[in-house]
Length: 497
Image (cartoon, rainbow, N blue to C red; front, side, top):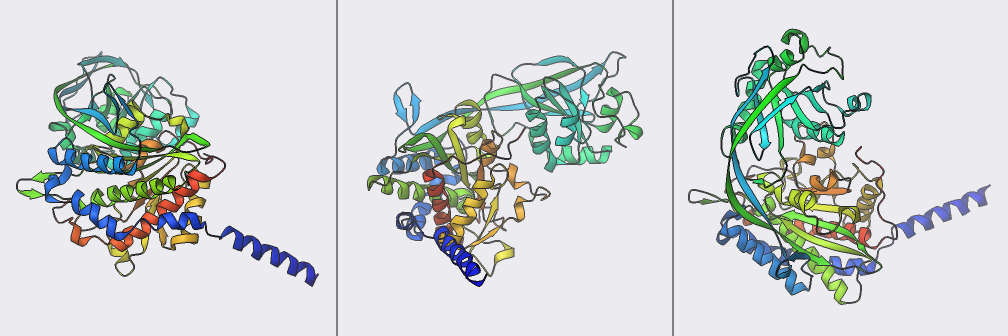
């Protein structure tokens, strides 16, 4: 028995050592991600010359040229097809819009008041006049859609606040709902609070939206308005005792916007072609736009997201060097810095929803780097950490692979605080990886947390911790190396339905 135990122990130790054996080739190229080069690039990207890199601004376009020139120097291919040939720039246009009126009218002559009872978010191409009978879906949770099929039908559900808006909209859209109506809060006070928070998007010219051939809007209802169209009183309705699947009375929705042409912007793409599995593509992203200037003050955005942008530049250099020296990965890698993130994830949305340069079905994963150069209050005494968000949402293999890469090579603290579904910050829905995740593409979002300089002119380069950035950059490299060189494609075992 003792000998048998020793044999088992020996096998276990051997297997453990083998699983932790380092890939020296990977180590070699990971070391090319250096704090010196990160600082060199960030000194340019976060400089006053870039004027805060506001989407569509001259400063943003200067930053785009700097990134494209770097990709070209590395020998990365320009993958975007244009009338003049291949380009590093994926251009997209933004339009500005402003809601003029939204109203609901019933056969009995009842009509709502704009803003007091109903408003809308999103964009339309022409005045909307349409009749609806909507399906009540309670709190709009995923379980409700398993009880009632809503494909091709308009739906309505409660939201308690802004933090639930994007998630519940996505659940409804994934279930096939043709139009979304949200019942905001259980009383007028809550409805008014949310309206006040969203007033920038409702009452004023938007910061810019993607041009679209289809109307893309959601309707926000006061609980009183919702109760009326479901033929009940507000007092009864907010108790949420109405049966899931109940249909409203028929009503007419009228909605109108003013629309004007805005600006053009561009994502910057550099492509490294793989070997045997080159049709499969790993996408590595960061957003290089920021929020520009306010008067004479420049918002340099050194951390947000200059830090992620220059990390992508360093990762591109590491893989390009490997390819040049005969160590081309099995899969292809697309290095993409996107614009329009601060306007609502618009650049990444354009890529996934309008013009995926490489088919989404061939996209194996997205590694997204957004703010990795600072230290938050929780880790003021330990800079060697990173918040990991979304790694386990779609693929258990991706989560395990990132953990393995960290244990083998970087040994920094991986914190999953913001990966919690109940976290009120909802960061999983707030950066560019989400546009890949909504298409069932496994993602990881690397993030250092927020700080006092977030979206302020004080987010400047002298506050950046380049040693921390180097470690996170090397972790992302090792994870990317594993994804790009593993025999089997990452398995999606938790797909959105």
